[in-house]
Image (cartoon, rainbow, N blue to C red; front, side, top):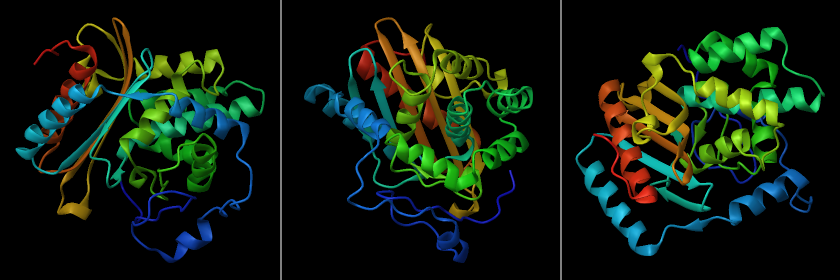
Length: 299
């Protein structure tokens, strides 16, 4: 994927930092005034997020130790977030700094695309469906570029995400260089696939259908933690020059397991090779999911 410079859109309450660029100020949406009341969508999103509870302290500490010990022996850095929609329990690890999303942002674009069609009281056009299919199932970059433009580019995506309470994501002019945290991507998954989210049933089913049928070569990632459960996922990978050519390798998805409906996001960067990053992402997902289910994932 060819990147056109790292230009990020600033939105309220979003992570500071990133690379400065003269065009950023021209492209950034206006900040919402502090006194403006939150929208109904924002209030609903905040209430859903606040309803979650943390892992039991003993389980959380054990998982923290396991992840710390594993990642100490791995190159680069990695963070993970999990939300069990069945129990309401949430967990996040090492979210101090954002990560480039690479092709994981295609899930965010899909959410914005479906909301755009829904707001216009229509279904996706045949062309939009073809492009969405290629974007998610094959990770086609040209289709992602067209749909990113259709939703309004970085300004349009920022507007949608912030309106849904997803407030720590910075869309970039180069969509693959969008910066985010695992917890924000878990929220994206929730808004995209959850019955309490903003999408109609048909649109939710369509999104899950796409993410459940990615091409076999791209079916690695968080699905390694699913065992025999059902998996809907999207992965992203990018050899980023920011880190001396180190690889960004990410994976997000929904794991439907017995007694659990898990939303999982693992983001990583600075791996020396893609295979190394994939191994890290899969092992981190397995450790985190085991803490929620008590079941050892297959090695």
